[in-house]
Length: 289
Image (cartoon, rainbow, N blue to C red; front, side):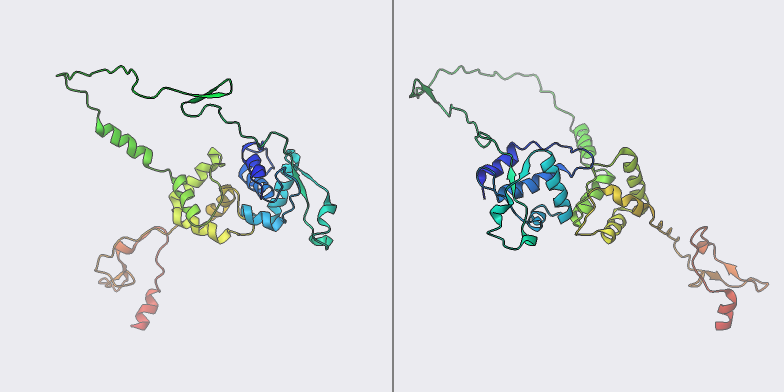
């Protein structure tokens, strides 16, 4: 473990944010670079953790770690080192990880500090101190006035604060996904995709969308963006409309007593235009009786 290498990875490594299209995200590149720095020397050399170890650091798949390593090499932050140096440590060639060197330069790990601390200053090699004791302070006395102070309007501020505290539907969905263990990002959605997600929320609700995303979730290869779940959410069946309360005059199947001509009468409280209740035929009910 090298504090100098970790400090360089955190403060000096130039990782673009956002990253170019096709490149892993900046947080993933940063965590993988920190994993290499954790195994490097103070000069950033001889870092050879396994891909599985780096995947455990970043909580991503091994394939995504390999993409991050290629991206870091393309950015000039790492380079491959002498592979013969780990041959003595790991005899089997098929199990040898790749040795990387961090692109650290001299002076990268130095943290400049201010020469002045507190009340001490250096003058010609001698540390001087300021005089202690009471100093001349100009004090201003505020005289009371008889004019009443202007009070703010608490009602308007309360309304504004309430509006600011109310999260949007997408924010509520993102919070529910994080609580369920889903790491997909919602800040990368375009305005058109945000509209589709809001329509799904208004149709199915937040809980139904989270359950559908958990069924599609793969822990070894999680979704990076919530845009991957939009086709799944749009394919969900719309919820069935709630039936009105039973009037109490009809039976459990929604039938009233026969009229004077012996015809079956359907109760108006059970008449639904869509998603009708599946009831047995009238003939079957008569035979059963």
